[in-house]
Length: 419
Image 1 (cartoon, rainbow, N blue to C red):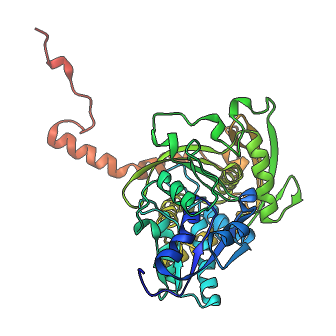
Image 2: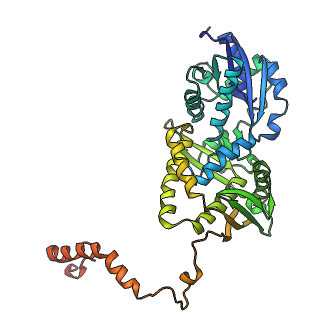
C-alpha cells in the first residue's frame, strides 16, 4: 500500500481517467472511495454516473447542482473583469476547477475523509487548479494525483486498465478527444488536434453550427445589464442558468463562439485546444460594448491591464488568492454604472455590437458631432496640443542643435551618388 489513507473523496466525471482511478485507489491505497460530481451543465454526461461509480467500487456518489453558483460567483465575475487568457480563451475550464475543488473539500470534511484525489495529468493545468484550491481551503488533506504515480501513460493504457477491471467507458481508440463540458463552454483536446497544422474536423464540434452553414438571415437580440450582470434578453428576465442556456442555443445556431488556440500552459508546455463558447462570447461582446459607453478613458484603459492579470490568476489556479479578491474589489467599483442595454447582431459565426444605451452614458452627441456645436471651441485644441507636445518639441530642438537634425528626420539620400 502507498500510504495511510482511510477515506478519499474523488473528483469524478465518469470519463476515462476517473473511471480508472476508482479501482486504482482501492487497489493501491486500500481506502474507501467516495465520488463527487459537480453538475456544472454537462447535461447528458451526467446520465448513469451513480451506477457506474458504484460498479467501479465507490461507496457512494455525490452529484451537486452548482450551475447557479458557478455562473454567479465564477463565470460572471471573470466576464465583468474582462479576463481573456492569451487574447482568445474565455477560461471556461479554468474557473470551473476551483468551484469543484471547493465543494470536494466540503464533502471531505462532511464525510470525515482524510484525502482528496483528482484525475488530472501531470502535464496539464488542472492539477494546479485543483491542488491550489485544496491547499487554500484545507491544507491538512492528503492529495492523491494518480497520473503522477501510476504506470498508465496514455489513453490507450487507460482503456486497457478499464477493460481489465470491467469498468465501462465511452472513450475509444477511434474517438480519443479529451473534452471538458459545462454550461459556459466545451473544450476539445488530443487526438488529431495535437497537430497544430490540421484543421479541426467539423464532426468534432458539438455546440456550434459551422458558420458557413448557419442561417442566412442575421439574428438581432438585446441584452440588459444591471451593474455589469446580465439580467434580461429582449425584455424577458432570466436567471443565470436560463440566460446562458438560451444564449448558448441561439449563439450555437449562428456559429458563434469557436476558438482554435495554441496556448501556453502553466507547466511550460504549449498545447492546442479548440473551444466552443457561444453564450459566453455573446456576453463578453455585449459587456465590453456597454463599458465603452459608461467608463471613462483612464478607468477603461487601466481595467484592460487588470483584465490580463486577472486572466492569469484564473488560468494559473489562483482563484482563492488575496490578489484575485483585491482585483474583484476594483472590478466591482468599475461595474457600478455598467447598466444599460446592448443590441447585438449574430451572423455566420460573428457577434457584433450594433447598438448600446445607458442612463450612465458618458457619450455626448453634442460634443462628438462633426457639425456645428456650441459646447466645444475647436480653437482650444491648439493650446492643448502645444502643451501636450512640448516635451517632444524640446527633445527635437536639442537634437537639431547637437546633431543638426531630429532623430526622426528622414536621411538625406541625395548625398549618396550612384556608381
